[in-house]
Amino acid sequence: MQVTETLNEGLKRAYELILTAEELDAKVNAKLKEAQPEIEMKGFRKGKVPMPLLKKQFGQRLMGESMQEAIDEAMSKHFEASGDRPALQPEVKMTNEDWKEGDDVNVAMSYEKLPDVPEVDFSGVEIEKLVAKADDAAVDEALASLAENAQDFKDRRKGTKAKDGDQVVIDFVGKVDGEPFEGGSAEDYPLVLGSNSFIPGFEDQLVGVKVEEEKAVEVTFPEEYGAEHLAGKAAVFDVTVKAVKEPVAAEIDDELAKKFGAEDLESLKGQIRERLEAEYVGAARQVMKRGLLDKLDTLVSFELPPALVDAEAKQIAHQLWHEEHPEVHDHNHDSIEPSDEHVKLAERRVRLGLLLAEIGQKAEIEVTDAEMTQAIMNQARQYPGQERAFFDFVRQNAQMQQQLRAPIFEDKVIDHIAEQATVTEKEVSKDELQKAVEALDEE
Image 1 (cartoon, rainbow, N blue to C red):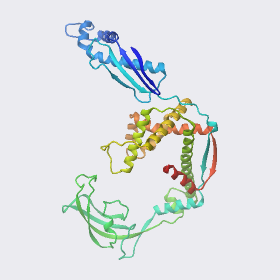
Image 2: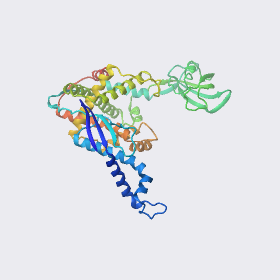
Image 3: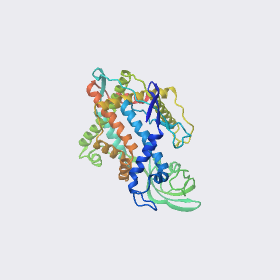
Image 4: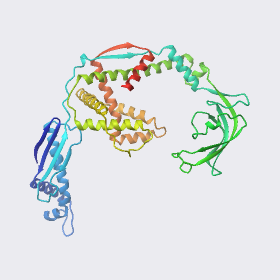
Protein backbone atom coordinates (compact mmCIF):
# COMPACT_ATOMS: atom_id res chain seq x y z
CA MET A 1 0.00 0.00 0.00
CA GLN A 2 1.43 3.37 -1.05
CA VAL A 3 0.65 6.28 1.28
CA THR A 4 1.32 9.86 0.11
CA GLU A 5 0.64 12.98 2.19
CA THR A 6 -1.46 15.54 0.31
CA LEU A 7 -2.24 18.04 3.09
CA ASN A 8 -0.42 19.12 6.24
CA GLU A 9 -1.97 22.35 7.45
CA GLY A 10 -2.37 23.04 11.16
CA LEU A 11 -4.17 20.03 12.55
CA LYS A 12 -5.59 19.01 9.16
CA ARG A 13 -4.08 16.00 7.43
CA ALA A 14 -4.89 14.30 4.13
CA TYR A 15 -3.35 11.30 2.40
CA GLU A 16 -3.69 9.36 -0.83
CA LEU A 17 -3.63 5.60 -0.38
CA ILE A 18 -3.02 3.37 -3.38
CA LEU A 19 -3.71 -0.34 -3.17
CA THR A 20 -2.20 -1.84 -6.31
CA ALA A 21 -4.08 -4.42 -8.32
CA GLU A 22 -1.30 -6.92 -7.60
CA GLU A 23 -1.61 -6.40 -3.81
CA LEU A 24 -5.38 -6.76 -3.94
CA ASP A 25 -5.17 -9.91 -6.06
CA ALA A 26 -2.61 -11.40 -3.68
CA LYS A 27 -4.90 -10.77 -0.68
CA VAL A 28 -7.87 -12.36 -2.47
CA ASN A 29 -5.78 -15.39 -3.43
CA ALA A 30 -4.52 -15.73 0.13
CA LYS A 31 -8.08 -15.74 1.45
CA LEU A 32 -9.16 -18.33 -1.12
CA LYS A 33 -6.18 -20.53 -0.33
CA GLU A 34 -6.95 -20.34 3.38
CA ALA A 35 -10.58 -21.29 2.81
CA GLN A 36 -9.93 -23.92 0.09
CA PRO A 37 -9.52 -26.97 2.40
CA GLU A 38 -13.04 -26.51 3.83
CA ILE A 39 -14.93 -25.73 0.61
CA GLU A 40 -17.17 -28.35 -0.98
CA MET A 41 -18.61 -28.03 -4.51
CA LYS A 42 -20.60 -30.39 -6.68
CA GLY A 43 -18.26 -32.55 -8.78
CA PHE A 44 -15.26 -32.06 -6.50
CA ARG A 45 -14.07 -33.61 -3.29
CA LYS A 46 -13.87 -31.41 -0.20
CA GLY A 47 -10.75 -29.23 -0.42
CA LYS A 48 -10.10 -30.10 -4.07
CA VAL A 49 -12.04 -27.30 -5.81
CA PRO A 50 -9.62 -25.62 -8.30
CA MET A 51 -8.53 -22.09 -7.46
CA PRO A 52 -9.82 -20.56 -10.76
CA LEU A 53 -13.29 -21.92 -10.01
CA LEU A 54 -13.13 -20.68 -6.43
CA LYS A 55 -12.09 -17.25 -7.63
CA LYS A 56 -14.97 -17.12 -10.09
CA GLN A 57 -17.44 -18.18 -7.39
CA PHE A 58 -16.21 -16.13 -4.40
CA GLY A 59 -13.71 -13.63 -5.80
CA GLN A 60 -16.04 -10.62 -6.05
CA ARG A 61 -17.20 -10.88 -2.45
CA LEU A 62 -13.69 -11.45 -1.10
CA MET A 63 -12.40 -8.51 -3.14
CA GLY A 64 -14.53 -6.08 -1.16
CA GLU A 65 -13.42 -7.62 2.13
CA SER A 66 -9.79 -7.49 1.04
CA MET A 67 -10.05 -3.83 0.03
CA GLN A 68 -11.48 -2.87 3.43
CA GLU A 69 -8.92 -4.93 5.34
CA ALA A 70 -6.02 -3.43 3.37
CA ILE A 71 -7.25 0.12 3.97
CA ASP A 72 -7.85 -0.54 7.69
CA GLU A 73 -4.35 -2.02 8.02
CA ALA A 74 -2.78 0.95 6.22
CA MET A 75 -4.63 3.42 8.45
CA SER A 76 -3.64 1.53 11.59
CA LYS A 77 0.03 1.49 10.56
CA HIS A 78 -0.11 5.18 9.65
CA PHE A 79 -1.49 6.26 13.04
CA GLU A 80 0.98 4.02 14.85
CA ALA A 81 3.92 5.45 12.91
CA SER A 82 2.84 9.10 12.95
CA GLY A 83 1.51 9.18 16.50
CA ASP A 84 -1.51 11.13 15.24
CA ARG A 85 -4.78 10.72 17.12
CA PRO A 86 -7.76 11.71 14.97
CA ALA A 87 -10.17 14.11 16.67
CA LEU A 88 -13.11 12.46 14.89
CA GLN A 89 -13.53 9.40 12.68
CA PRO A 90 -11.30 9.91 9.59
CA GLU A 91 -13.11 10.53 6.31
CA VAL A 92 -12.20 7.76 3.86
CA LYS A 93 -13.51 7.50 0.32
CA MET A 94 -12.56 5.76 -2.91
CA THR A 95 -11.59 8.33 -5.55
CA ASN A 96 -11.60 6.21 -8.73
CA GLU A 97 -15.33 5.56 -8.83
CA ASP A 98 -15.03 3.95 -12.28
CA TRP A 99 -12.79 1.24 -10.79
CA LYS A 100 -12.92 -2.18 -12.39
CA GLU A 101 -11.17 -5.42 -11.62
CA GLY A 102 -7.51 -5.18 -12.55
CA ASP A 103 -7.23 -1.47 -11.62
CA ASP A 104 -5.40 -0.02 -8.64
CA VAL A 105 -7.63 1.18 -5.80
CA ASN A 106 -7.22 4.90 -5.03
CA VAL A 107 -8.41 6.09 -1.62
CA ALA A 108 -8.42 9.57 -0.06
CA MET A 109 -8.15 9.78 3.73
CA SER A 110 -8.50 13.03 5.67
CA TYR A 111 -8.82 13.91 9.35
CA GLU A 112 -8.04 16.49 11.99
CA LYS A 113 -5.48 15.32 14.53
CA LEU A 114 -5.69 16.03 18.22
CA PRO A 115 -3.26 18.78 19.21
CA ASP A 116 -0.27 18.45 21.48
CA VAL A 117 -1.44 19.70 24.87
CA PRO A 118 1.17 21.69 26.82
CA GLU A 119 2.28 20.73 30.32
CA VAL A 120 0.80 22.80 33.13
CA ASP A 121 2.45 23.52 36.49
CA PHE A 122 -0.41 23.35 38.99
CA SER A 123 1.66 24.40 41.98
CA GLY A 124 1.09 28.05 41.06
CA VAL A 125 -2.68 27.65 40.74
CA GLU A 126 -4.62 29.20 43.62
CA ILE A 127 -8.19 28.05 44.34
CA GLU A 128 -10.74 29.32 46.83
CA LYS A 129 -12.88 26.71 48.57
CA LEU A 130 -16.06 27.94 50.23
CA VAL A 131 -17.02 26.34 53.55
CA ALA A 132 -20.52 26.72 55.00
CA LYS A 133 -21.83 25.28 58.27
CA ALA A 134 -25.44 24.36 58.93
CA ASP A 135 -26.47 26.74 61.72
CA ASP A 136 -29.49 26.35 64.00
CA ALA A 137 -31.61 28.62 61.81
CA ALA A 138 -31.03 26.41 58.75
CA VAL A 139 -31.85 23.27 60.73
CA ASP A 140 -35.05 24.87 62.09
CA GLU A 141 -36.05 25.92 58.57
CA ALA A 142 -35.57 22.36 57.32
CA LEU A 143 -37.54 21.03 60.31
CA ALA A 144 -40.43 23.38 59.52
CA SER A 145 -40.42 22.12 55.94
CA LEU A 146 -40.54 18.51 57.15
CA ALA A 147 -43.44 19.36 59.45
CA GLU A 148 -45.29 20.95 56.56
CA ASN A 149 -44.73 17.90 54.37
CA ALA A 150 -45.93 15.69 57.22
CA GLN A 151 -49.10 17.77 57.60
CA ASP A 152 -52.38 16.26 58.53
CA PHE A 153 -55.90 17.46 57.77
CA LYS A 154 -58.77 18.20 60.14
CA ASP A 155 -62.44 18.79 59.34
CA ARG A 156 -63.47 22.36 58.72
CA ARG A 157 -66.63 23.68 60.35
CA LYS A 158 -69.69 22.40 58.48
CA GLY A 159 -70.74 24.83 55.77
CA THR A 160 -67.21 26.17 55.20
CA LYS A 161 -66.20 26.45 51.55
CA ALA A 162 -63.15 24.50 50.37
CA LYS A 163 -60.07 26.57 49.64
CA ASP A 164 -56.99 25.91 47.55
CA GLY A 165 -54.74 23.67 49.66
CA ASP A 166 -57.67 22.05 51.49
CA GLN A 167 -58.39 18.35 51.25
CA VAL A 168 -61.80 17.27 50.01
CA VAL A 169 -62.99 13.71 50.47
CA ILE A 170 -65.17 12.82 47.50
CA ASP A 171 -67.09 10.11 45.70
CA PHE A 172 -67.09 10.51 41.93
CA VAL A 173 -68.27 8.81 38.75
CA GLY A 174 -66.76 9.87 35.42
CA LYS A 175 -68.72 9.63 32.18
CA VAL A 176 -67.86 10.07 28.51
CA ASP A 177 -70.81 10.48 26.14
CA GLY A 178 -73.06 9.75 29.11
CA GLU A 179 -71.49 6.35 29.81
CA PRO A 180 -69.25 5.57 32.84
CA PHE A 181 -65.73 4.51 31.84
CA GLU A 182 -63.32 2.09 33.48
CA GLY A 183 -61.12 3.68 36.15
CA GLY A 184 -63.27 6.82 36.30
CA SER A 185 -64.99 6.14 39.63
CA ALA A 186 -63.94 6.12 43.28
CA GLU A 187 -65.34 6.45 46.80
CA ASP A 188 -63.92 8.35 49.78
CA TYR A 189 -61.09 9.70 47.64
CA PRO A 190 -58.91 12.28 49.48
CA LEU A 191 -57.94 15.03 47.03
CA VAL A 192 -55.79 18.05 47.94
CA LEU A 193 -56.96 21.02 45.89
CA GLY A 194 -54.10 22.59 43.98
CA SER A 195 -52.03 19.39 43.97
CA ASN A 196 -52.58 19.02 40.20
CA SER A 197 -52.97 15.28 40.67
CA PHE A 198 -56.17 15.17 38.61
CA ILE A 199 -57.02 16.21 35.05
CA PRO A 200 -56.40 19.94 34.42
CA GLY A 201 -59.46 21.94 35.47
CA PHE A 202 -60.89 19.27 37.80
CA GLU A 203 -59.54 20.62 41.09
CA ASP A 204 -60.24 24.26 40.17
CA GLN A 205 -63.97 23.51 39.92
CA LEU A 206 -64.04 22.09 43.46
CA VAL A 207 -62.73 25.26 45.08
CA GLY A 208 -65.71 26.68 47.01
CA VAL A 209 -67.63 23.43 47.47
CA LYS A 210 -69.17 22.45 50.83
CA VAL A 211 -69.80 19.18 52.63
CA GLU A 212 -72.71 17.18 51.15
CA GLU A 213 -72.67 19.30 47.99
CA GLU A 214 -73.04 17.54 44.65
CA LYS A 215 -71.31 18.99 41.60
CA ALA A 216 -70.91 18.07 37.95
CA VAL A 217 -67.28 18.71 37.00
CA GLU A 218 -66.78 19.13 33.26
CA VAL A 219 -63.25 18.54 31.89
CA THR A 220 -61.49 17.50 28.71
CA PHE A 221 -58.78 14.85 28.79
CA PRO A 222 -55.44 16.10 27.40
CA GLU A 223 -54.57 15.05 23.85
CA GLU A 224 -51.46 13.27 25.16
CA TYR A 225 -53.37 11.43 27.91
CA GLY A 226 -52.00 7.94 28.61
CA ALA A 227 -55.27 6.09 27.90
CA GLU A 228 -55.79 6.46 24.16
CA HIS A 229 -59.56 5.86 24.33
CA LEU A 230 -59.89 8.92 26.60
CA ALA A 231 -57.31 11.26 25.03
CA GLY A 232 -58.93 14.50 23.90
CA LYS A 233 -62.41 13.40 25.05
CA ALA A 234 -64.84 15.61 26.99
CA ALA A 235 -65.96 14.07 30.29
CA VAL A 236 -68.36 14.86 33.14
CA PHE A 237 -67.64 13.74 36.71
CA ASP A 238 -70.55 13.54 39.11
CA VAL A 239 -68.92 14.47 42.41
CA THR A 240 -70.32 14.18 45.95
CA VAL A 241 -68.37 16.06 48.63
CA LYS A 242 -68.23 14.06 51.88
CA ALA A 243 -65.70 16.16 53.80
CA VAL A 244 -63.77 19.44 53.60
CA LYS A 245 -60.55 19.50 55.63
CA GLU A 246 -57.94 22.16 56.31
CA PRO A 247 -54.21 21.39 56.43
CA VAL A 248 -52.58 21.25 59.84
CA ALA A 249 -48.80 21.27 60.15
CA ALA A 250 -47.35 18.49 62.26
CA GLU A 251 -45.94 19.37 65.66
CA ILE A 252 -42.15 19.58 65.76
CA ASP A 253 -41.52 16.99 68.44
CA ASP A 254 -40.26 13.46 69.05
CA GLU A 255 -43.31 12.03 67.28
CA LEU A 256 -42.42 13.92 64.12
CA ALA A 257 -38.86 12.62 64.38
CA LYS A 258 -40.10 9.03 64.60
CA LYS A 259 -42.14 9.52 61.41
CA PHE A 260 -38.84 10.19 59.63
CA GLY A 261 -37.02 7.24 61.17
CA ALA A 262 -35.16 9.06 63.97
CA GLU A 263 -35.22 8.11 67.66
CA ASP A 264 -36.10 11.58 68.87
CA LEU A 265 -36.09 15.24 67.85
CA GLU A 266 -32.43 15.82 68.71
CA SER A 267 -31.42 12.82 66.60
CA LEU A 268 -33.49 14.15 63.70
CA LYS A 269 -31.82 17.56 64.03
CA GLY A 270 -28.42 15.86 63.87
CA GLN A 271 -29.40 13.99 60.71
CA ILE A 272 -30.69 17.20 59.14
CA ARG A 273 -27.48 19.04 60.00
CA GLU A 274 -25.38 16.29 58.38
CA ARG A 275 -27.55 16.28 55.26
CA LEU A 276 -27.44 20.07 54.92
CA GLU A 277 -23.67 20.18 55.33
CA ALA A 278 -23.27 17.41 52.74
CA GLU A 279 -25.36 19.56 50.37
CA TYR A 280 -23.19 22.58 51.17
CA VAL A 281 -20.03 20.56 50.42
CA GLY A 282 -21.49 19.56 47.04
CA ALA A 283 -22.45 23.14 46.24
CA ALA A 284 -19.05 24.45 47.30
CA ARG A 285 -17.39 21.87 45.08
CA GLN A 286 -19.36 23.17 42.08
CA VAL A 287 -18.10 26.68 42.77
CA MET A 288 -14.51 25.52 43.30
CA LYS A 289 -14.61 23.40 40.14
CA ARG A 290 -15.80 26.34 38.03
CA GLY A 291 -13.09 28.53 39.52
CA LEU A 292 -10.43 25.93 38.77
CA LEU A 293 -11.63 25.47 35.20
CA ASP A 294 -11.59 29.25 34.71
CA LYS A 295 -7.97 29.31 35.89
CA LEU A 296 -6.99 26.45 33.60
CA ASP A 297 -8.69 28.15 30.67
CA THR A 298 -6.37 31.13 31.07
CA LEU A 299 -3.26 29.01 31.63
CA VAL A 300 -3.32 26.98 28.43
CA SER A 301 -3.63 27.86 24.78
CA PHE A 302 -3.31 25.48 21.84
CA GLU A 303 -4.84 24.94 18.43
CA LEU A 304 -8.24 23.26 18.48
CA PRO A 305 -9.60 20.81 15.89
CA PRO A 306 -12.21 22.86 13.94
CA ALA A 307 -14.46 19.83 13.48
CA LEU A 308 -14.63 19.22 17.24
CA VAL A 309 -15.44 22.88 17.94
CA ASP A 310 -18.08 22.92 15.21
CA ALA A 311 -19.75 19.75 16.50
CA GLU A 312 -19.75 21.07 20.08
CA ALA A 313 -21.12 24.48 19.02
CA LYS A 314 -23.97 22.82 17.12
CA GLN A 315 -24.78 20.64 20.11
CA ILE A 316 -24.83 23.68 22.44
CA ALA A 317 -27.05 25.64 20.05
CA HIS A 318 -29.41 22.68 19.66
CA GLN A 319 -29.65 22.06 23.41
CA LEU A 320 -30.30 25.73 24.24
CA TRP A 321 -32.93 25.95 21.49
CA HIS A 322 -34.83 23.04 23.03
CA GLU A 323 -34.59 24.66 26.47
CA GLU A 324 -36.22 27.75 24.98
CA HIS A 325 -38.85 25.62 23.19
CA PRO A 326 -39.78 22.92 25.76
CA GLU A 327 -42.96 22.14 23.83
CA VAL A 328 -40.86 20.60 21.00
CA HIS A 329 -39.93 17.04 21.95
CA ASP A 330 -38.60 15.77 18.61
CA HIS A 331 -35.87 16.97 16.25
CA ASN A 332 -38.12 17.69 13.27
CA HIS A 333 -37.22 21.35 13.09
CA ASP A 334 -34.98 23.62 11.06
CA SER A 335 -31.25 23.36 11.72
CA ILE A 336 -30.01 25.63 14.49
CA GLU A 337 -27.05 27.77 13.46
CA PRO A 338 -24.57 28.37 16.30
CA SER A 339 -23.96 31.98 17.29
CA ASP A 340 -20.55 33.50 18.04
CA GLU A 341 -21.35 33.01 21.73
CA HIS A 342 -22.03 29.31 21.15
CA VAL A 343 -18.72 28.94 19.28
CA LYS A 344 -16.84 30.72 22.07
CA LEU A 345 -18.34 28.40 24.68
CA ALA A 346 -17.60 25.39 22.45
CA GLU A 347 -13.95 26.41 22.17
CA ARG A 348 -13.70 26.58 25.97
CA ARG A 349 -15.33 23.18 26.42
CA VAL A 350 -13.17 21.50 23.78
CA ARG A 351 -9.98 23.10 25.12
CA LEU A 352 -10.69 22.10 28.72
CA GLY A 353 -11.93 18.66 27.68
CA LEU A 354 -8.70 17.92 25.80
CA LEU A 355 -6.63 19.31 28.66
CA LEU A 356 -8.37 17.25 31.34
CA ALA A 357 -8.19 14.13 29.17
CA GLU A 358 -4.44 14.63 28.70
CA ILE A 359 -3.87 15.26 32.42
CA GLY A 360 -5.91 12.20 33.35
CA GLN A 361 -4.07 10.01 30.87
CA LYS A 362 -0.63 11.10 32.07
CA ALA A 363 -1.69 10.64 35.70
CA GLU A 364 -3.08 7.19 34.80
CA ILE A 365 -6.47 8.09 36.27
CA GLU A 366 -9.12 5.45 35.69
CA VAL A 367 -12.76 4.95 36.57
CA THR A 368 -13.06 1.72 38.55
CA ASP A 369 -15.72 -0.94 38.05
CA ALA A 370 -17.04 -0.15 41.54
CA GLU A 371 -17.42 3.53 40.65
CA MET A 372 -19.23 2.67 37.44
CA THR A 373 -21.56 0.25 39.26
CA GLN A 374 -22.40 2.95 41.81
CA ALA A 375 -23.10 5.46 39.05
CA ILE A 376 -25.39 3.02 37.25
CA MET A 377 -27.24 2.25 40.49
CA ASN A 378 -27.73 5.96 41.18
CA GLN A 379 -29.24 6.43 37.72
CA ALA A 380 -31.34 3.28 38.03
CA ARG A 381 -33.14 4.71 41.07
CA GLN A 382 -34.89 7.11 38.70
CA TYR A 383 -36.74 4.11 37.25
CA PRO A 384 -38.52 2.42 40.20
CA GLY A 385 -39.33 -1.19 39.48
CA GLN A 386 -37.15 -1.22 36.38
CA GLU A 387 -33.74 -1.02 38.01
CA ARG A 388 -32.56 -4.41 36.71
CA ALA A 389 -33.68 -3.62 33.15
CA PHE A 390 -31.87 -0.27 33.27
CA PHE A 391 -28.75 -1.91 34.67
CA ASP A 392 -28.72 -4.47 31.85
CA PHE A 393 -29.36 -1.76 29.26
CA VAL A 394 -26.33 0.24 30.39
CA ARG A 395 -24.12 -2.84 30.49
CA GLN A 396 -24.92 -3.47 26.81
CA ASN A 397 -24.71 0.16 25.67
CA ALA A 398 -21.17 1.52 25.22
CA GLN A 399 -22.37 5.07 24.56
CA MET A 400 -24.41 5.14 27.78
CA GLN A 401 -21.45 3.79 29.72
CA GLN A 402 -19.30 6.61 28.36
CA GLN A 403 -21.91 9.19 29.38
CA LEU A 404 -21.76 7.87 32.94
CA ARG A 405 -17.98 7.43 32.98
CA ALA A 406 -17.07 10.90 31.66
CA PRO A 407 -18.20 13.01 34.66
CA ILE A 408 -16.60 10.56 37.11
CA PHE A 409 -13.31 10.75 35.22
CA GLU A 410 -13.50 14.55 35.06
CA ASP A 411 -14.13 14.84 38.82
CA LYS A 412 -11.16 12.57 39.56
CA VAL A 413 -8.93 14.70 37.34
CA ILE A 414 -10.18 17.86 39.11
CA ASP A 415 -9.29 16.26 42.47
CA HIS A 416 -5.85 15.36 41.12
CA ILE A 417 -5.23 18.97 40.08
CA ALA A 418 -6.59 20.36 43.37
CA GLU A 419 -4.14 18.19 45.31
CA GLN A 420 -1.27 20.00 43.61
CA ALA A 421 -2.77 23.49 43.69
CA THR A 422 -2.93 25.94 46.60
CA VAL A 423 -6.42 25.70 48.11
CA THR A 424 -7.61 28.41 50.52
CA GLU A 425 -10.75 27.85 52.55
CA LYS A 426 -13.21 30.70 53.10
CA GLU A 427 -16.09 30.45 55.56
CA VAL A 428 -19.37 31.75 54.17
CA SER A 429 -23.03 31.71 55.15
CA LYS A 430 -25.62 29.48 53.49
CA ASP A 431 -27.01 32.50 51.63
CA GLU A 432 -23.58 33.52 50.35
CA LEU A 433 -22.97 29.97 49.14
CA GLN A 434 -26.36 29.95 47.44
CA LYS A 435 -25.56 33.21 45.64
CA ALA A 436 -22.23 31.79 44.46
CA VAL A 437 -24.01 28.73 43.03
CA GLU A 438 -26.67 30.87 41.33
CA ALA A 439 -23.91 32.98 39.78
CA LEU A 440 -22.63 29.85 37.99
CA ASP A 441 -25.86 29.64 35.96
CA GLU A 442 -25.70 33.33 35.07
CA GLU A 443 -22.22 33.12 33.54
